[in-house]
Length: 311
Ligand code: UDP
Ligand code: MG
Image (cartoon, rainbow, N blue to C red):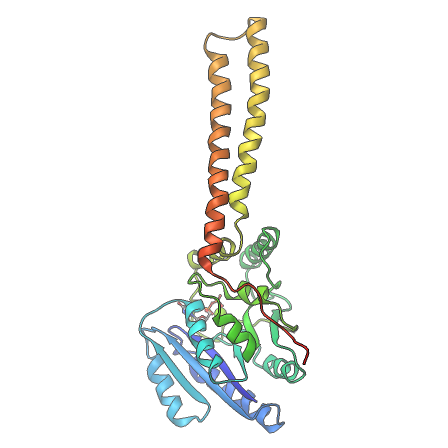
């Protein structure tokens, strides 16, 4: 079987030598025990501004495993990963995606391949514990996974983009025409036999994170809005709730009016404020329902994938 390891790189000159050494060692080991016949390390240079591409070119001539793709512009981690997976879907039996910075355990790749050889299509790398992450990153990540689940998005807990995918799942992935990519969500929504490999997440080997807080938040929002139209429905609920308050306000206003404790004009203002507010929100929510439907249609996601068929 032919395995491609897809590694998106953005300004990763500091880690590339070590990453290449470690991944080559892993592929040597897997070939040694006949778990794979052929291995490729595919570096996808996501428009780096440092010497990343020059390094990749150098390794490609010295190291028989290494190949490189250079994207013309920085398109972001998810799109760069997609480029590599698309390349792999046409050439490999399975692809493993991993970050360049060696935070994910390269030795877990062996276990993933074992699962693949036993017929599993998708193997998720899941972080066992976030010892090295800051309290803040841990907390926000946890909150995000919860929120995403509650909003109905399928997601594998504590899994990022370290996973193995078989060729047929790669081809299935290519059937998603959407441009707003949240790969871990798409892959989890596809189905197919899957397994989980646990590993300890390490410190970045060198260099600094290419995901500052701003990018992290925008990525999280992307994930939620790519997989859930429920926030739109919540507007409807909020509208209904405010209308309900308006009903109470009407009674309260009228009661105060009859009782004589209301200032002139207060009753009509109070009542109309709640009523109009509620009506506007309700109207937004109803429009939102249609917007949600349109959103689902324009994404043109595939309807289903066949896992098996009788002869
Ligand atoms: N990356 C990329 N394009 C970008 C940003 C990041 O290809 O615009 C790559 C980066 O080189 C790394 C991976 O995505 O291989 C994950 O980035 P990083 O390790 O900085 O994220 P963190 O682990 O801090 O969340
Ligand atoms: Mg990292």
